[in-house]
Length: 317
Image 1 (cartoon, one colour):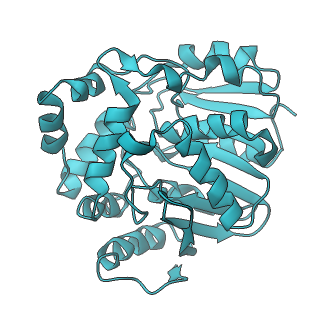
Image 2: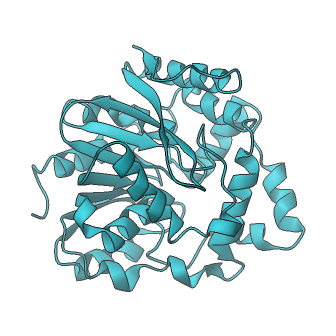
């Protein structure tokens, strides 16, 4: 299969796109690499698009990129036209200093601008982790833009608690040292870090999946942008108060599904169930022995739970 371009790749972008093409080839996916020009500070946002049908927006997590969704493309693109942007500062998107922009408002603003740029008025949305936060916040701030919503893996925004390891990044001096120390420079290093945080069983994840992330560490501004995001999100006490969406999402009435693994590194299902239970039109799927990115586990359980809901076949109406 192929990765096509609506642009002429730069010398800087070429190694990343070559690695991304290998991921598409492994998963037998045809996709297009494209750019949308958005108002500053978002600048140029790189995205992947594929498929036919109504639109589906995919929003990735904190340290990942649009590449994280490629393993699901085969299941999604028969029914949807998918749009998977790299968050500004990740992948090939323009680097952003989140200490200047913040994220609660900007994380929704650039997504709304992106939808405008690609000509989508209303869409189904699926998000993972920080992308799950953006999905929920987009539905809160712009309910007219979201048709239905799936949070796959625990979304940020439903608890201010964070794992101890991530709290350490906010220790003066120590935090930045840890951040630099854990920079992954090889595929085995990336795999080990990924398995520690994102999946229970990495047997189904090929080496090719990790190469764009390793190559991407050298893209201009990416590491600094990620560090600025970490500084913006939390403190040693946990997530900052503006990232707590619990009260706001309870008022959402659009169809919503949470797909949540019992072994999620960040938050257990007990964090999400009360929120889903208080919403007018939400359901909750618990997956035994699945981690934070459950569609990358060896089973198809997470993908099936997400796709059947997004297609309107099951779940709240």
